[in-house]
Each structure stands twice: as C-alpha cells, then as structure tokens.
Length: 139
Image (cartoon, rainbow, N blue to C red):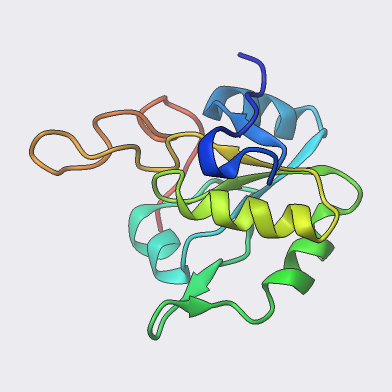
C-alpha cells in the first residue's frame, strides 16, 4: 500500500496516511522514524513499539498539549520522515499536522496502536498495530 494523501479537512496539512505495515517497513529500512504520540501511561499500560521515540502529543494532567513537543519531534526526525502512532490514528493526525508546520515530512499511521472499537467497544480486535501482528511489547 502506498501513502495516501490526507482527505477532508486534513487535506494538504500533512504528508499522508500510511498502513501500519508500510510504516514498519519504512522504519526497518531506515527511511522513517516512528514517533509514539500517546501518553506515558498509555505506553506503560497498553504496550509500545520497541524503538519508537516517545513524544506525547498531550499529557496528563488534563491532557494538555506537551509544551516540548516541537523540540522533541525536531530532535527525533534527524533528517528522516516521521511516522506518527497513537491509540486509534486520530491524535497522530494532529501531531502530523504540527510536525508538518515545523517543516518535517510527517505521516499518520492508520488505525493506530489499538485500532477501532468493535461492537462491544473493545479495542484491539478491529485493526491496529497489535492486531496486525507487528512488533510490540508490554512492561
């Protein structure tokens, strides 16, 4: 699957959306850096992708915007494109937009780490990084 340009209200505001598999291929090939924009608590409780750079978009308390996001994401890029991962692929769109405003080539990873909720409102059973069997760990 090739990168897809963002659609709707996000059109032209970041580089595009990529499947989890394509994002992982880019990371393995050294073309991209994966940035996990979930909170510290989410990574600790739900799991994380080994090697992903943790740069929370929002953080507790109050889910306030991370005041050091810009600096951290610029440092993480090191001249490579970014693939941004969140829980479901929504926060990572906002983070990709901001990274693009900073002059970086930033992509949203579709479905996020946990995917969409199923009919019982459970995540992890309908798409997402873990569902697709890509590398992850839990402490």
